[in-house]
Length: 497
Image 1: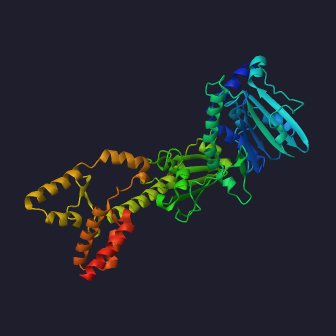
Image 2: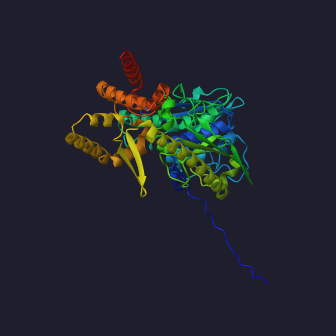
């Protein structure tokens, strides 16, 4: 017979002051904190969200208002409770919550006083977490003001909706607690950096038939589609679907247009501050809300070959445990079955990129196109060498005395041997689209055009074919208008002889 061991129980309720201070350091940034509050607004079916900042006041604050369903006092008190929802509970489709910690931990990460005012069914309720009061009393108790007239921006609430107000912005002051101007400068800079994040994270809600409107100090933010789907040059692969126990995973690959097929503002906007090289990879959405982006999940390296590749992954909110979505909703881990499928997606992307680059490389070094440079691959190495047989070089060399001709070809060889490979590699890895061919003056271009025309015409090529060949190689390609003019003038002069 099993012996019954007696046991006792002891109260292990955490100290309010200690735990609530610990919630401040989960790892939120300002942009992820504001995004978490907006998640609650979307869950409350808001269609208009306003972010209002007051940074120059002696007591600066940030307010986030929505026109959602609002909360009763009982619902508000529950929402102010840390861990208000069990993460294992089944959530409705529009519910972007996870642990019931988001609004509280996000707010505490940026401020010491969180005030929430909500209006529902004609009744207005308010609740306040003040960390200084919690530290003094060490109680799990929110304050419920009876009068909201002194609460900043409370008058902006409509018939229904919620105001989330951050005050005592100790985490945003930048250390300038007693310098209002410097403090405002720091906060405004952080707010400006947050703008792009919001445009990206919630872009699909902003693009709906009845779009979500998010404004910052009265200015409506435009959505930022990382896949540039409205650009006709964007390549979208067919959507794939992977069925799992807790729902379906949708996967779709996109290839962005070349930078010459987009306006510079759009190109820079999609790239972001770190550029396209850092923006490539998987874009993971949970319920249409962007969770994570700009990563290949360790399945391959970020490279210039795949710089324009983006892969959309959509998961439902029922898969949080499978993907290990964190409290901040800003990190995730791949389930093994999804990892295997994504490996095949990456292989397809890399093969397509290599074919594109290989085709482009062959086009530039094809002997028929008379390139200025030859690409030589041997012994596992790739070298680029000036094409000494190019008409611009060979014609000039023929005009030189034999003793000078040798020195001329030596100079060309030195140029090839001095190619700044390391610098080119660094530039290509960072901002390849900013690397352009150097311009040549009129006299140099005339000499190159006439020499090339002469050789190609002697080979009995049709003039249309000659023009097509020259249009694809530099220096003619980058100065095509001038090249066409010189070709026309040269042909006209030869006809008159």
